[in-house]
Length: 326
Image (cartoon, rainbow, N blue to C red; front, side):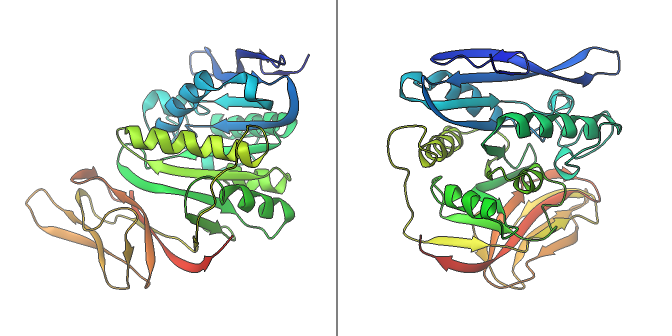
């Protein structure tokens, strides 16, 4: 009988288990929860995970709720939900791991002889390579920022990337970041999976407090992707037009203070427009974040008056590359 970690894949049933991925500093094992729903009809294995970044818990909650709501009688193939992949970062409510300071989504494919995060990346990738036909990677703006609902596809011009894009265009958003090269995607799980010929789509949605709308968007993205893979009945939606964005600029603060946004996520700004500013504790503006290009999509922006330190990521702008029909 096939297993993923300790969770058994049993046609017509829902099962639970875990993947052991190393130990904490006191030797306590990290057990990553795994939720499996397997239909009686044959089909692909669909893997969805959350919390590669520990503070992005909206994906975790959405995976758990989607799993329990899923009607297994309608399912062809196997659904694998991994709500929290990065347990140390999740426990710390932080983007990076407190064990080694690493950003897990910048160090794939990992290293079995590295520090904890590198070992975790290696373990996760090996399990996905062994079990998954399609992977959906859920992200948000975390506790200190917000992002709109959009998709990211790692485009290396391969057939796998084309299949990833096909799925992404059916997941409920008209905005897709076609990520090329290493900028913003170097070391990501999606880049490694596409290299392994596993179609992968990253979903960005919300941040801070998980709203009802954010949860609906996460869950519809999962459902529509499964429909696009012929795992659930029904046709996923097709947008009238897709906005394709690329070549992101990441705004990392030079000064500490309180962040004051000057725009909202999902806005389109032009060169010279202000994205936000940093105010020190005397009320003086010590830094401004300025949009570098025309027709740029604001893909992330920090929360109002969020305390920042030098070197903190507080915004992303991505210029529009094209408008496409399906």
